[in-house]
Image 1 (cartoon, rainbow, N blue to C red):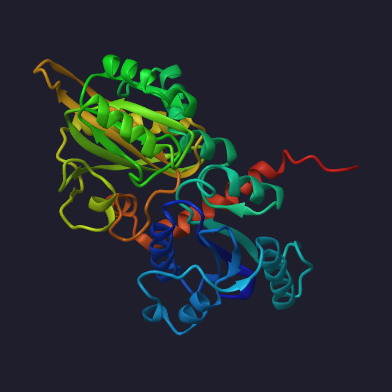
Image 2 (cartoon, rainbow, N blue to C red):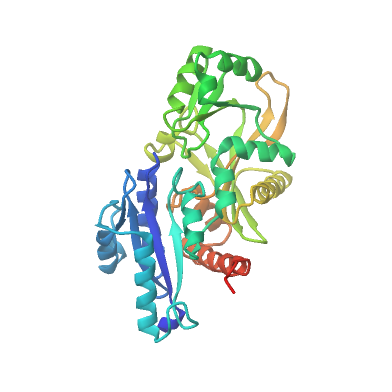
Amino acid sequence: MTSRSRTHVIVIFGGESAEHDVSCVTAAHVLRALDPERYDVTTVAISRSGEWMLAEGAMAALARGRDALPERLEASGRASSLGEVIASAARTAASDTGATIGGAGAARTVVLPLLHGPMGEDGTVQGMLDLAHVAYVGAGVLGSAVSMDKTTTKRVLSAEGIAQPNFVALREDDVVGGRAIATAVARLGLPLFVKPANMGSSVGVTKAKSLDEAVVAARAALTYDEWVLLEEAITGREIEVAVLGNREPRASVAGEIVPGREFYDYEDKYIGDGAKLLVPAPLSESQAHAVRDMALRVFRAVRAEGMARVDFFLEERRADGGSGRGFLCNEINTIPGFTPISMYPKLWQASGLTYPALLDELIALALERHDRRSRFRTTAR
């Protein structure tokens, strides 16, 4: 394979959110899976306090071979910036190919942001990459922002008529004193779930079984975001579907999570091994078709692109014994967990797409979206 057909992939990991550690684990697995015959890789780390660094240690380990990579990358290295990395990559590509920077012979650059949560999955980094005119994997600014803010997601789904659990969104000022929480509890019933509006990986999520617990949980959630989401507790199964694509997205087989704890919390996802992942989920043919179709509706409703994992509850019976409402959308994640044992790649593997092939397709989708959107760019004449 000639240098003209290679792609330069910039992997960004770490970040300022509470999901920093998850990102560092994800990045190690992605580096191990990227085909060295197809891609030149640069790793950029973001510290917990927001410093950008060229993660030279990760690149040195990768140069020694995939087996030299640790299970978790360290967000450390030489102080740098994304602009510096991109400019350096363009100069190197031009030198290797004999092309001018940005010319037809230059290697394409794609950024792979593996930044879970705020300041990475919420449209902030995506906006910066759009300003830099660089292709990147995943949803754009709007899709990322809408999907990251759970209250906005739910309002969009309501407008689209997509079934979901009942919820109440409260701002920080509303939580003070607890009166608004008492009103929410009266409306939603107990138990209920309390979570930060802008967070993922179940960080800050609490199951409250009393009004006092709901008040404490809401105040704890406010350490992560100024908006708090209170949501009715659903008695049902947890079903997830992976979506892949841009203008013509497709859905994977459905999977089911059987929590090892009271609910599928952060410890169950990343620390313990009690949770069971059933892929494919034991659903009837009609149920499997319905949830996959619903996942695509959610994906399109929030203007997602590239990839997303859409999470559902299957409420077959209500807690009081009444008939259930079927599939209820819980949330959508535009940068889902991406280790080989994470649900998103496992769902695609069960659908016939290997982990390395999944990365190949995501990178190709990033370039397709970038080229398609570039025609709308306003240029001086």
